Image (cartoon, rainbow over the protein chains, first blue to last red):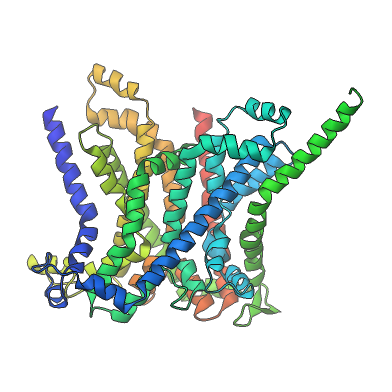
Length: 269
Length: 301
């Protein structure tokens, strides 16, 4: 039994070292000055934070971070609001064609978003939404996965409660707002964390619909930085990398349990 | 009162329908504008020659498709895509499964390891790619430093057509482990503990328990994760754009990157649309396959 523990711990520690190595390596590089980076050192001899200062000075990192934050929050709120409204309709309201509409919602999950990007780009362009937070966020507001996740939770609320509230003359929206949402905190948090993470990390769409410094998100900022500075200043690039992964890593660590439970629910259905 | 009742019921039903539509309308409207319309528009454009702005000029029938099937670069991108899928999906699942089995042990401090293994889920493709680009750097990156330290000669990880796809795939496996690990761990935790308790009493070994309890009970989760990973692999873009730009000699020019290049760099909207349609059909087939197989499994049980 103890032998098994020793073996397990050894494997756990080794795996952790391998998995976290790239992140630790990036952090280590971000603390070196240029000459040490070029020597190929693994650990900085003299720790310096100059790269972090330089990262803010050389590229408009604060603007990028702010843009990413705004876009991620917009999409998060949009997805949570639209998914919960739709899930409420699917669970509590009876109307003709509900089953078919639900099937169609599920069917949207089969469409790879990349297959529709050309007309979507043209739509955003004709709306005048290039380089705007609307163009970056609105196309992602409707989310079948989110609707599905919340529907699973809403189904656990007894339908009799809804009927009773209807007889008592409580409006649908008040029932939704005062009863359904408060008891569904866990899946709502799961969905929020998921939305924020995926939006913050989005790459292809922001690449297509932004082309000014004012509008770019951090992911595109890091691409600009890497292609402009190639090799000359890896320390600064790594400092920027560390700065842009901190928000999502913190969010992941805080919401890991909910995320895991929520995603598994979606998987097992 | 008795007269008013049927009237009331009719009104309630009507307003149920209205309310249903009202609550669904934001989602339906956005799906319509940003998913259904562009999907049909893509299919439509794939049969037309267009100007650089995607305005259809003349109907060309299946010309774009015919051109694709006879073009060497299209087959090369199919080859790159399939190679990428085969190199990333099985390896990611096997490693994530191993990590999940370790992290499912009831040990002190296990929470820390779970967090560490899921960390890459919080890492963006862009940030991860930049880190891997540095690790693959021929002169100062860790991989070549290691090779030199053991006396081997360095490799042009991202510039050698022989290694580029492998290098991008390895980086991708690392990026995808976090998400895959979380899902598999969730699946493991859903397995009824009493199964293991009775197996322990019977004195069965860890290997036997793994084969006769864990893997069968986990198979729906593994299946789900397999399909999701497969679909994700077909949609890969970011790491290609950052690490290789589809090169060297198109060896990493996966399908989504090919679509992007055709549409937004070469302004060949019709050709890009035809490739997008083929991508859509592929993903559709894979998803359909998933439903069919899951259905059969349910029948068996």
